[in-house]
Image (cartoon, rainbow, N blue to C red; front, side, top):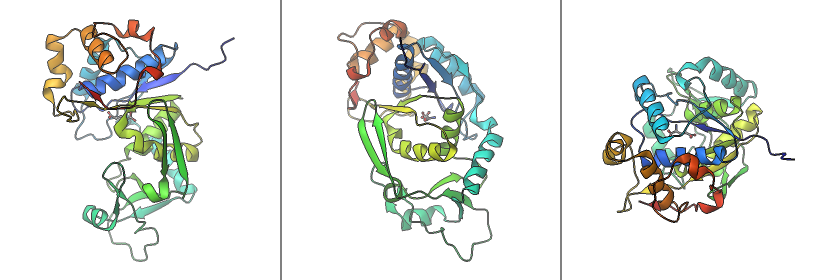
Length: 298
Ligand code: GLU
């Protein structure tokens, strides 16, 4: 008898532009991982940043996913509509005595704090932890972190260890303007949706320990993580939303979805030849051990 629970995965795109090949690749692997085992997929629009995101881009994203053949089973509420839910979890952190107000300005943060090892941001030195005379302005809110190693046993990157105190420091969960930050929203949303596996780009590996910490505080189990490699242009450049030539708006003009999926699967070592294939066909032969953690050159 099969005792494995049904996997629940998610797509969590930010509707701030067209999907580029890196986004397509992460979505494809997330879909293959779940659908090759008969699992369930949740779609959620990460539109916390209301300045950069729009409903029009969300519509285009859904259309792009359908065009690729990457179906989802349910769409949950976008993050912009969930601040009342995030308030409850924020209060939980306050009740645990783990929150404190932070008045540091952007320039203070970058001058005072040590550079972060992996992603260029800083390790917060705890400046506002015991502030005696707070300035008269609205603060951001930070959660205190323990001096504890978090180990991510990643499906793609192997073992990744981060000490939250020395590698990250107390981190912001709500900004001074009242907006919740990605780390809190994503933990709540994945936790409430019962997500069992989180597949996304390698650039978010360094966020997993912060999310694991919040999962513990909120009482959610840790999901399985799979951080897929970055796709690089032939000259070694990382693809970004600025690479308009490699976004779906352009690619859909001259490629069929099967050609695009075949090309990505071949570049990633999932196929021996560069032949057109649908996501559904590819799912019949997908296993994580075919995918290495190394960056993929297009
Ligand atoms: N919304 C993020 C993005 O579009 C992904 C966040 C996540 O998968 O946790 O890059």
